[in-house]
Image (tube, rainbow, N blue to C red; front, top):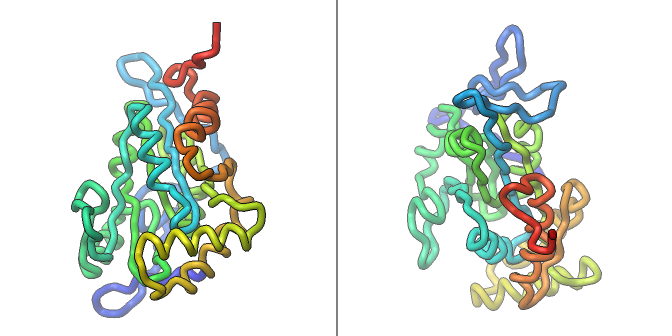
Length: 257
């Protein structure tokens, strides 16, 4: 996937700036991108260590069911939801500030210039999306849990920067559609898109991109295959045990004696 660089309002691409001592991502002032020690740091408050914060990030192709599985997970655990920014228009039922922060392209460029995002990516339909960094730091400083979703390019950016976030463990999950082969999975996704949108406009391009994303599933630490009508079972039997391995204090094993 080719990432397009956002230009400023004058049409010039924003150059990457380097400090004399450490390489710094220009979109996140002060966040070092090359670091030999990838162990999460413990923040001290009132002389007691704060538990590790969890950043649970889902990635997967269009219509894989990421929104459904995230909703089911949020119903079971105390967490915050990472509200991304986007330049696309709201869909029916979407609320600004709840589902997304909807902004103009000019405003989005300003946010990028000011280092507001930890990752920025462009979708197949040319809309921009960005994940704000300040809510993440606030959440992890208190040992909280953040749940969100991001596309493949965004995940690749985040993976290189998450180690520099204080007190954070990244739990990256690729959510696959059902099917034994890639062809089977693409058929499922095509059917879901048609059912949801009732139009064939742009479907071919979105499915082509979905195939590329599925082919990159091996890049993720955790892969989960969705099953029709089994959302609750997937959360209880696959996702919660995974999270328990990082934070047993928050996710006690119900089978433990």
